[in-house]
Length: 261
Image (cartoon, rainbow, N blue to C red; front, side, top):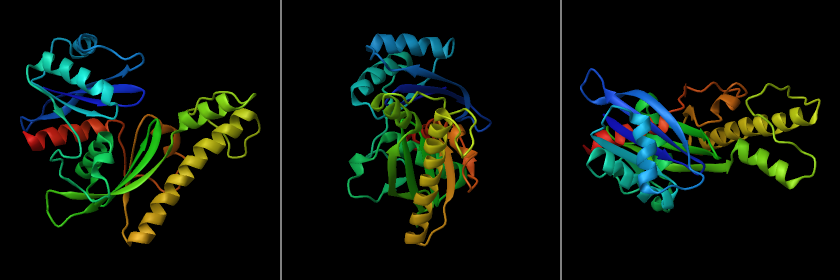
């Protein structure tokens, strides 16, 4: 079995892949979300992961992290559980992506893994939209090489929860809201106004970004959605996505591990 971990700004999502009909670890058996606040020591991460994997003993692990201070501790915990050092994804890892941008080292491991997962699922060209703490859009183009694709950049904006928290903390009377709730575009109370502004605003912004890149590059993109807030936004997009996959980063991590082993 393969243990994969996506370490984000507010939480870590772990997944356990088991062997499919090919004999490779391609079946996502289960996932779990872990809070990263407060930070933990390696043995605490190991205890958390032991509880998650139960009686199963993964033979190896792969990690994508955007939180450097947590990466080493989780890697140590993973090695203690599997007996081998984990693959820690970064811009230098052979992921199958050519990072055709000004500063490859600036691309988050989560965006690399998500792009790999999207290419595996629907092919390239593809626009990968991750509705997390930040809402990110990444654009992956076809490559001349059959086993590679080209990541050329994208856009980053505040995520839904971050927008909501900023409104609540930066004003005297605006409340925190549940972005998975229903609302009308014409908000009739304060909560509905916030939902309309943030959710429809995000949906519109994402679609505008994709349209502008398509116009500039002369390329049509399939759109893949992921992230914890994808369900809040997808129904409000005028352009139906090709795929909504909450575990896209984990799937991409599995594919990168497989490519390197």
